[in-house]
Image (cartoon, rainbow, N blue to C red; front, side):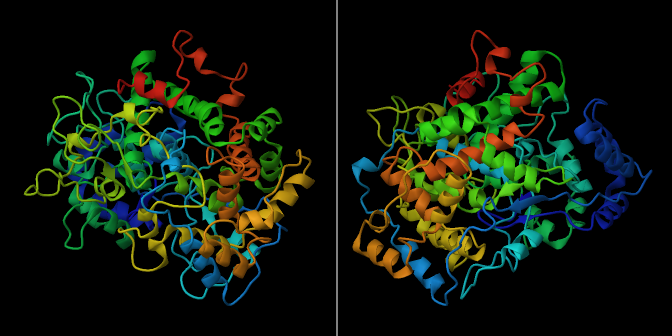
Length: 605
């Protein structure tokens, strides 16, 4: 389980678990004896929780002490260890900043800026990213990107920068069952399970404020489990939070010691950093619970496996075809992602986690930043109204989507006198109909095109400290330089040498095309021939993909990684016992083959 202090901030891990366990036992043992065994005792066939959970449950009863195992970490490595990086220059940070500053979307946005990609795919990509990687944004010497930075040697980076995610597309971001986590995280993972049916996950009802979007009459749980609920119901005690180490304590307590009641209790706190990814988290939790109901087995593992396999299948068969060059994607899938498979063989070693390519994590898979809109037709209250509904705002601004989370104010915009709340107001629940399909008559119900321009809110993120972190383009370009990523040209050359079909590369004059500021920034930095990888991936999508999908280099890096992770995971749907699994194996009559199908199956359409 990963914790964070807020959007874009580094993740926080549990430290010194033994003092926490001792403090917990002395301060709150009487109350925990009543609730912990029920919350933490798992069925005997659920191996992923059993050992750590049993130890903590026994500690709660005062029977044993707890020493959590060291947290297992994954490896960040380079696809192309010898690929040439940007040259080290004193003025390189300024040159990259100039390029970043040229990536500002013109206002008002051009009408042709809307893509034919439903907006959900922007945030589904973020959901996938959070399931795969964590730590490249962490505060450390390696990740410092402000000021007069210089690139770090790759050997130093790979020796000291580790992935805190499993990397296997196994949805530990949903379940909070990371390998080797400490006792407090394991305890929270137990509390995330529904006590009346341990096969299911807890969700919460939205706050009854404002109007209500149409929801299933028998199941309107459309918000995440939050800290206030656990405290009010005696499932956690304030003394437990006060016993945490200082970094982790800040996640759950304000400076004056009062609980942060709206803090989401989920497998990865980053999935509550904006409202849309939070609602995707809700959707997949609902999917798990629907599978638990549909199988009638009361088996957590069965529902979990079905959720994971449907998710993995959607990544390869819906997400990638939506955002990738179709010819290159077909080649990667037909060959079973040999680029990643060779990378896996070089770097897997004896660790339980999947190695993660830096070129993917730090550059190529950040293409989704370009797809973010400045505002969305979110629902009938914050978007296009429907008959009989009083609209509040004509759209949901990006800043609103950050506000209605555990790190935001949860304050209803239409009730100025209301205090910040603990749960999501019900008039902010998403209407998936507006997010999962394209409506030609409503062009604002789409993602932005994938190109070298970013929506203005991303260039001045209000919830970030002053400096480079407020400017997303500067952040991405500086981080790629600091982490010594190979240039786009070096990556393409290495892929060609690996035996893939050759693909076209952008000519220098095309890379420099655009506004006068863009042309000057590219030429001044020499980026027309040695191009920062993130910028190039966006530019080739703009040129070769017409903004509707990635170009060939971006597709190779993204598709090889995502397909390769699934191909090399023996527990994935690709490697199911008896042959590759497909959604028809769960429901031949009405298989779940799209995010739209997921929303419908979960009663949200």
